[in-house]
Image (cartoon, rainbow over all chains, first blue to last red; front, side, top):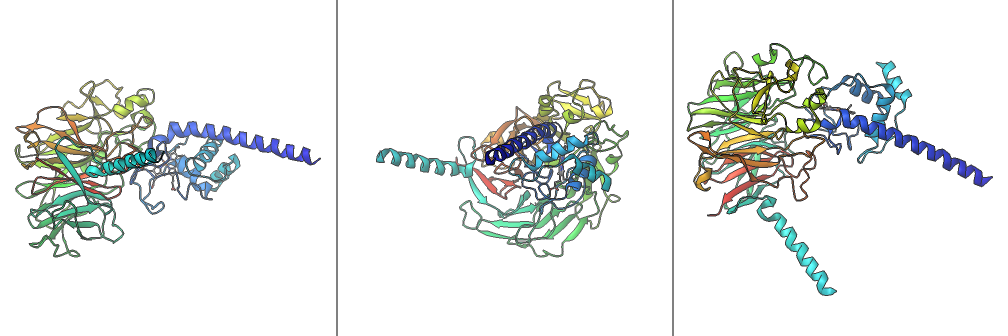
Length: 131
Length: 413
């Protein structure tokens, strides 16, 4: 009995992790196509110009709705991010679907030194309703 | 065994000492460098007075709350031991003419008075020479230089990449004519002494320049030279026309001699260094081959794409070998828009000049700013070369605006 439960948990965990790995992979593809030019392969951005995503408190933070809006509508405000200002205008990606934004956010929240919860499609949809 | 580990230790020791030789820079034979100052803040342009007191303009006020840093090497060992500062506003431009020190914020130019020791006398009450220039996030820094008559030239960068209706957006067309050019995307000329000037009192001296950070007056030709940052992201917005590899090499970073009224062609064209032509921007109907810009200048020098020329300095001194006399030094900050290909730049280049014209290929003069591990990512690079100044003894100073190092480069004879 004990053995069965453990193996069930192991199997369930395995599927979770695998789903995550798949989402991460899809997110990475989108990152490379649409974000890497500015935010760089190391997620480090460009000082004074393009904000870093690696070790950025907002990126691993709780306000998922804000992250969704930034990706969908772009971002060009004079605002300090972790104490620094960035001068470039971020390109909007209005064409990305909800599941793609979820994968992309899961990817940037769990790459480089970032470790944060995965983002679900439901969270992306909830963000849309708020707007 | 003991011997071997000793040997290893000795090797490691020798290596780390070597890594610091010439402050970590690689230089042509006969040159040496010292770390004149370190960690002073985000040091953009630098300027020096006739006694060798060096001033740096910081992009943001440093931990001490200063945005103009004064550095003095009284004992002449190549390292500044007297460091002080003033000013609260961030900016890029700085210029010293006798006892007058000009410094810029992103929307104004101020004038300070220095005393006989190169100490500022009015740190909190400078004269406002120019004010209310556009500062709209992108390309907001204001570089400055003066001509011998005392006119001041100010770069007002375009607050845009390619003058699209919606900046940096896929499929957005270029505006025709580009409305930015009436008040930015060029160099403006003002009286270096008159106070409180703005657009109405100044004059658009040259146009069609996306963003100039390096500029210098050439006394031989008696004219203004500038280096332009070429446009970004051809591959992002036109992936069917430009591959990642093509974008990494297009367009060239360019140097121009700008006479009054000249036009360098932005945003309508960019310079392709392989076809050696001014190519119509895709935002304006170009396809990578169609030419444009009939009335626009061709560059005097074309450098590899995206390396970001930050300062231009014509060498007037006698310390360096004859080949360097009257030639141009240019700092290259280091690229970001070559990604996903490896980044480039992070060095100081040299272009030989004769009779006011380039006389030979450009070459790398000082390299190694990215650091011992040669990490050429914008975040990872140890130093990002920015400002240039020539000391009264002919030494060359280079600033780094990421960690705030100042390098002093000398020739040892």
